[in-house]
Structure formats: C-alpha cells, structure tokens
Amino acid sequence: MINSLRGMNDILSDDYERFTYFISAATKIAQRYGFHFIETPLLEETALFKRSVGESSDIVGKEMYQFIDKGENDVCLRPEGTAGVVRAFIQKKLDRAGGIHRFFYHGAMFRYERPQKGRLRQFHQFGVESFGVDSVYEDASMIMMVSDILKELGIGYRLQLNSLGCNDCMPNYREELVAFVRKCEGGICEDCVRRVDTNPIRVLDCKNGSCQELYIGAPKLINHLCSDCGNDFNTLKKILEDNNIEYEVNTNLVRGLDYYSKTAFEFVSDNIGSQNAIAGGGRYDRLVEFLDGRATPAVGFAMGIERLMELIVMPEVKKDGYYIGALDDEAIDMIVKIAHNKRKTDVVAIDYKTKNLKNHLKAADKVNAKYCAVIGSNEIASGTIWVKNLKDKTEKTVTLEEF
Image 1 (cartoon, rainbow, N blue to C red):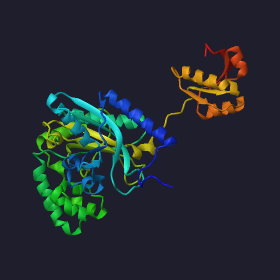
Image 2 (image 1 turned 120 degrees about the vertical axis):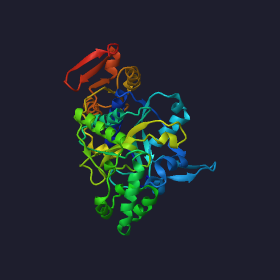
Image 3 (image 1 turned 90 degrees about the vertical axis):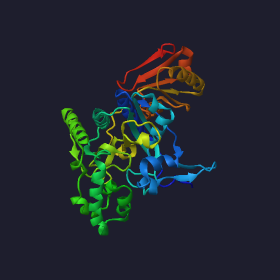
Image 4 (image 1 turned 120 degrees about the horizontal axis):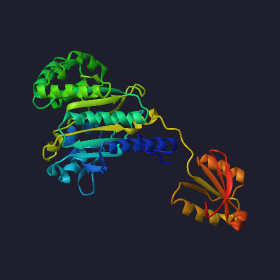
C-alpha cells in the first residue's frame, strides 16, 4: 500500500468542513477591509526566498524543498507566501504604478521540518499583504483584521507586540547585541553562533531554553528606538487600546524572517502546546526594494490554518437543501431530471438506489437535508411528488410543476 508522505496529510470529512469554514470566514473579513484575492505559483525560483526570507533563516538553510528542474533551473516549493506576492507585485509593475494595493491569499506551503501537532511539511496559510501605505494605522488595521478573524472563529488569543526599529536605530543596537552575545558564546547553541554573524537579532528568537536564560540580560531593541520608531510604536499601542484590543509587549519577538522592520506582532494561543503561535506578521518596508522593485512601504500577516483547526468553534449545522429518492425502478430517470432542474436554485442530494420511504428518510437525515422528496410509479402517474420537511416534520404531496 502506498501512503502519503510524512507530514503531508489529506483533508477529509470533519477537517474539510473546518478548513472550508476557516477560508470562508477569513475571506469574508479580508474583503470587508478592502482586500482582493491573489494566487501565486507553488513553485518559484529558489533565489526569491534566499533574497527575501534570508539565507540566515532556518527556512532557507534547512527546510526548503529545493531541486534543479529539467530546464536546469534552481527552484523550490514555496515555504511562505509573502515573497511570492511581492514578486508578483513587482513583476506586474504595480510598484511603479503607485497607489495602494491590498491582497489576500490562501494555499499550500512546504517546509521540510520535523512533523508535529499543528506543524506539517505541507501546510496551509491564509495571508494578507498591503502595499503603498507607510502609516502605522495600516499596521493596526492588520492586527484588527486578525483579531476579527479569530473572534469570528471563536478562538481566544493573546497578542504580543514589538518594534524591530529601522535603518536609523537598528545598526547601533545590533552592535550592542553582538557584543553581549559574544560574551555568552561559550554557552549558546550552534544556530545562535551562526546567527551572530548573519542576523544577530534572530538569536532572541532561539527556542533553546539554555540560550534564553543567557539572553535574559540582553539589551532590548525597544530601548534603542529612534524618535520616529518610538512614536509609531506608541501610536500603535494607543490605537489598539482605543479599540479595546488587549496586547502585551514582548521584547524578544523578532519573527522568523529577515525582511521585517518596525512593527512585529504575533497572536498566540494557550490551548495548542509549546508551538503556540497561530498568526503573525509585521511591517517590511525594505522587501520590495530588496527584490529590485521601487521602494514601497508594506505590511502583512499570515495564519497557519492547520494550527487553528482544532480551536475553531463551528457554528450549529442547519438542515439545508433537498434529498430526492426513488421508491421503484420506474422513478429513477425521473429523479435525475427533477434533481437537475432543482439544482438551479437549491442544494440537492440524490440516491440512485430504490428504497422504501423509511430508508429514504434515514438517508436524508445523514446528508442533513431539510427536505426529503420521494417519487414512485404512483406519483409519476399522478404528476406529483411527496415532500417532508425534516425540520418541522410537516409533509405534503405537491405537483411536480409546483415542486
């Protein structure tokens, strides 16, 4: 027997209902905020992620599904969504068109990492990217959108905030942080040793407990912000407070990708174990320029759908649509014709096997139909069909034309 690859799961039955409910709810809210759908390819040039996500990141260094294709191109399955959207934004010359462009997307991402609860090798993300707005009010809008989506799904959360500064305040802080980490170098993990030279701020994101103990006394970027970054961060906090969105400042929150600057945020849940991040994002004003586009302010977020699945509070399932069945062989062709016409306005389930009325009613219940309609040779002769409302238990015989 051939099984699915490790960390790549099928989505069936109950999971499928939760999955599609999430997509529907998140899409509805993104559209309310004025965002439009974008779809980018699953396969991209490897260089796209090396230049955007950063070669110092675990994603690029350890986790990408990378290979040389038949045209000798170095390609990989996308490990995240933002870089592809930025590539499309530049390729379609939207960076030169000016104005504001807001997109949302959802789809599969791929990372070769150790599968665990809520973390798969093929997983799905819902993401949002906004281009052309340099105001911190857009950052707040991103956070509000995530909050609205989670509330719609009945998911509780804690919001964590930080500021990663800008090109004016980051260099001095980086020097001070590197000097601090060098003093701890004998006790830190191999990943942190590598990050000191490539992207030192990432050491603060290390998941190694002994490293985190050493970094308790590390200098905090939030204390080194320039006046512009400090004012923006204070404004962001006030906007959230004014809109009753609770938050906590986490000075070690740096996000896992190299392209963030200024605002960084993460939504976490206390109900899914140690890997508790359920959504995150921030501002990445330099990424469009990094990828050879015209400098464009940008901000966005992504949500891992599999991590949210078991937390979603599903709405009560209401009976809906019709079940149509045949009482004898003579009626089978008729129910196909009736169902075909009825599907122009309603959801219709059909059973091609002849059954008695009791079994048709059971089958209608299984598909959660609101109405069970059956027809046999007697009904065909009289041009009628028997219909029962399974919600209020009323029943009647109506003409086929009326049905």
